[in-house]
Image (cartoon, rainbow, N blue to C red):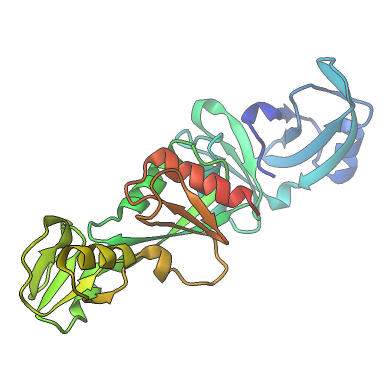
Length: 281
């Protein structure tokens, strides 16, 4: 239950031990500001976190009609780090991951305060090809998370398909890749399909189904092909996963637990795809 905004969290210093009984006495028959949904209560070095429900209405201060203690001091960790943007869910997730089982209260950038629950972290697998390294998709995901474009407390797990490793298993004297990429290397003869080269050797295409169709259209013959499309190589393991595919022209597509973005995706397309994938569950 990550607060929607730090404005929803009120920090309150009290003069009593933070027990369930004392918190109930403090909250009973009180009013709260219309924006306040949570209290972070301080007593000395102790901190507790409480969620509140207010009566309906338009008044600036409304009666508290219910409350729930999210965590008492023994289950709270307090972090003061001015580099953490507490409004950014993924930034909060990174902090929470370091303290499993604890509610983490963070005083971060601009002195803003918020908290994150231990069970809120969402792990997202990101599968892409290398080289280049780091993979393009990993860079785009990092930028989307840093910019706060992703609305969920996501921690990415990066997976790589190494094209050089795939190429090392090819037995023909030549290899055809869809296009040139910095870092591709092999002792074999290398061709790049987008250059429409003259290919006279026995060759293997390391590419997707579309690359195979392009090859047959250009050369009017078949070629042995090794799959390299992340969408096709992604395991069917039920985990949330982001991949790219050249068949997606713009935007994104959702398929089961997978979000698919274009090969030339933008940061915004990546962020939109992640948000849509995680909102669909």
